[in-house]
Length: 257
Image 1 (cartoon, helix red, strand yellow):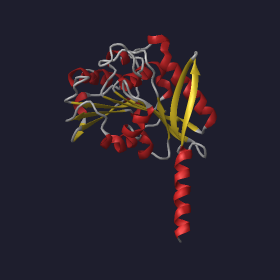
Image 2 (tube, helix red, strand yellow; image 1 turned 30 degrees about the vertical axis):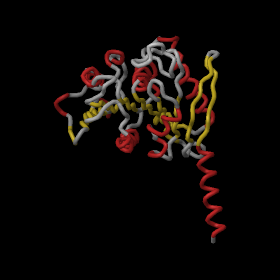
Image 3 (cartoon, helix red, strand yellow; image 1 turned 60 degrees about the vertical axis):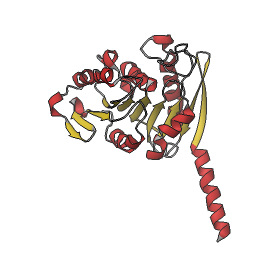
Image 4 (cartoon, one colour; image 1 turned 45 degrees about the vertical axis):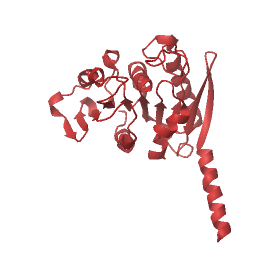
C-alpha cells in the first residue's frame, strides 16, 4: 500500500510538470516568452485565456497572482511576458517589463507577439476560435484594451483590472468585458478609470440605468448578447484573486458569435 501511495504522488507530480510549458518566440528579431498550461487542448477543442501581467511583472508572479490555470483547469492558459522599453508610472526609464499602451506604439511589438503566439498555439493545440479570452492587470489591462482596439475580432470577452481603455476603444467592436476598479488605487486613480465606463456602455449600447447590482458587482446587458461587468472594489491596485472564479464563469458564458 505504501508503494502505491508513492507511485501515485510521483505520477501526479509528473502530470503537473508536463501541464506547464515554456514557449519561446522571435518576433522581428526580439526574443519573447510565454508559459502555458495545456489544460485539455491536446485532446479536444478548448478555450484559451491570454494573461498579461502588470508593469515590472513577469510570468512567474502572474502564475501566482493571476492564477487562472487553477480556476479553469480545462482551458489552455497562456501567461505572456512583457519586455522593457515602456515607461511606467513607477518606472520612468522603462527598464522593467511592460506592454505597449496604445495602438501603433513601439511598432506594435506586443500586438505582433500576441499574433505570433496565437498562430503557434493554433498549430500545436485544438483551439476553439469562438472562445478566446484575455485578462490583464494594470499595464497588462491597458494592453488588453489595445488588443480590443486592434484585434477585437479574435476575442469572445476581456477582463481588465486596474487600468481601462478610455477613448482608445471608442471605435472598438462590441465585446463583453469585466472591468475591475479599486476605489483606493494609489497608482491608477479610480476616478480616471471610471471615465471608461460610459465609453464601454456606448460601445455595447447599454442603458446605464438598467444595471443589476450585487455587492461590489454591477451587471449590464448589451447588444448582441454582450455584457458589461463593473466591479468597484473597496481595495487598491492589487488583482482581486477572490474574483477569479467569477471571472472564469463570465468567460465561459461569453462565446463569440
